Amino acid sequence: MTVPFQLGKLPTLSRSTVDRQETLRTNPERLLARWPQAEVLLLDEQGRTPVREDEGVLSCRKALSFGDAPPEEAMFLGEWQGVDYWTLPGEPAGEQEVVESRGSWGLTERYPKADGEVWVDLRGYGDRLDDTSAGLFTTAHALRNWHRRARFCARDGSPTQVTQFGWATRCEAKGHEEYPRTDPAIICLVHDEAGVNGERVLLARQPIWPQGRYSVLAGFVEAGESLEGCVTREIREEAGIEVGDVRYLGSQPWPFPRSIMLGFTARADSSQPLHPAEGEIEEALWVSRADVQAAFANEGRPTPIGDGTSTLMLPGNSSIARVMLEAWAYAE
Image 1 (tube, rainbow, N blue to C red):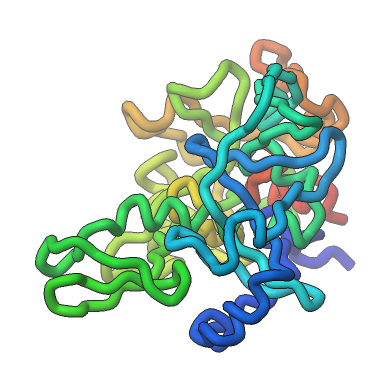
Image 2: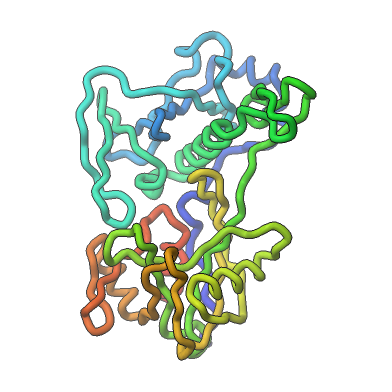
């Protein structure tokens, strides 16, 4: 019996093994005592971190190489298997070369390499990391992005100081505390009404994307809006159609700069005319399950679809959109 499809695996950036409970970061005596055995993840100005070439594990540094205590800018990420992990700013050292690697959407990424380490970015390389590394990198990226935007108090504009080892800021004038913010956004796979899981999926492309690059629709949740309400509004605004049977699938942090993507699916009558939002959506179209499967099989290369006049490139491996499309494409 056919059942509604579900995500077949955790989205890439939702994977994490690290214990990040609040009691760990609010216990300075514990953190200071464990600093000599701690590991440090470095992030450069572009948000890249080092990995050993062709390996899926972060290349961390020994904490003691940065001093006998955490530097002022150090941020605590969590604990895993008896080891504390922190993040600090850092840059590639020594003689550098540039290496190329296939990243998101099958496009070529260029990374700096020094001392046998390649400095990679989260969006293009996250899917190649193990669960612990993916979780650490995602958290470090999210914290760093928030702090870059939280240097002044939102209430009175005065400078802020970092507290709780990176997990809060305090206003210097009146002591107001702020905590890392996450912007909720929905991302929805809309399929037609054939059977339980449909036979076609609605895909769209933004004007700035490379030719052939399509994905499912997404948008930010507005103030006072439910998640389900956001789904129906965004699909109506971006594609001009009405959807029903909205159903939650799963979520993934997306720290570019500070979102969490809340994955949904919905059904729609595919005979409704599509009206892509001017300036936001260059094209929207219905794509068959067979064509999506062909695009998966043709990994990273444009795949002819429909009558052959259009081509399809699927979302990158670090995106929840890809996990959603894969689950739908191979649903029984």
